[in-house]
Amino acid sequence: MDFNHKSIMVAEVLNSLNIKSDGIYLDCTLGGGGHALAIGKKLSAQGKIIGIDQDEDAIKAATENLSGLACDVKIIRGNFSKLNEILDDLDVDKIDGALFDLGVSSYQIDTPERGFSYMKDSPLDMRMDRRRSLTAREVINNYEEDRLIKIFREYGEERFSKRIAAAICRERKISPIETTGELVKIIESNAPHTKNGGHPAKRIFQAIRIEVNGELEILSDAIKNAVARLKIGGRLAVITFHSLEDRIVKETLKTLAQGCICPKNFPVCVCNHKAAIKILGKAITPAQIEIKSNSRAKSAKLRVADKIFDINSEEE
Image 1 (cartoon, one colour):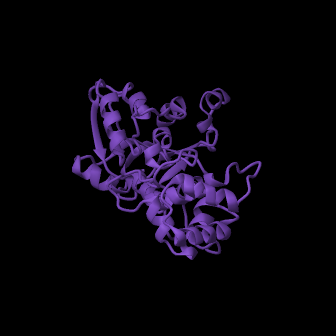
Image 2 (image 1 turned 90 degrees about the vertical axis):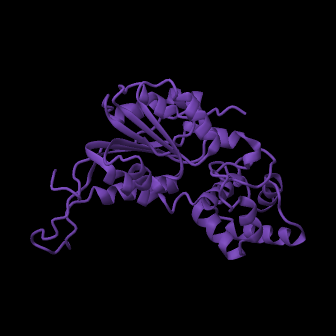
């Protein structure tokens, strides 16, 4: 299957990053290279694109899609939690911009054997990086009931977490749960459809995917690391697709944008703490024309920040 993924809010990302023709830009979630290609077209031969992705199929697609760019292109198979090590290995100190396009790609959802979709019957997998040992099958068949409840409640915000987890544990005692179709039947029997929430399996599959890939636990630190590598005036852009991601991004940016951290009852500032970034406006959402042509854009939010101070430097 070809790696088909329609990048979200490309024009808004380009505008937010304020591209410099000779700049260095880090795409922390490269995918098929849609955003990176748009950025790269604005760069000269002196510019550089560094793309990181943990999915082997994405790496292959991006390598082909970015091959015609005039700028320098470095594509690394890895996780954005390792962005500091990746930049160090490339002998890159500071960058002009960084992009995170979070969540699962259309290609991963639409490829049945990857096991991401509750609408296609396939083996339980959900690994973005298939070198990892933990799969959705392992989570469903081997996690304790209390742990499943916690994951479904925290990562899926599912009201019927206890009922679904209990049903899974009953069924797996009879025989292991092997496919997404088997899991969906269990979920459907124990959680009703809701008008606003859609199919109940959507929330459970999101929760399992987040657990398998450790998506949320690495996010805040990765954003902080990316900001630390930005030059003064460099831009950070982050696209989220659900409330859990967005909450972490919003709170992390808020922390990085905070100046004085002295207790409120102090008459003057003695901490000398300075904000590292300035948050640029409110979250940007896709235009209606984009949502009509790509329904998966509906929940997307783009948050942007400008680097204004480097804690490792005396420069402002």
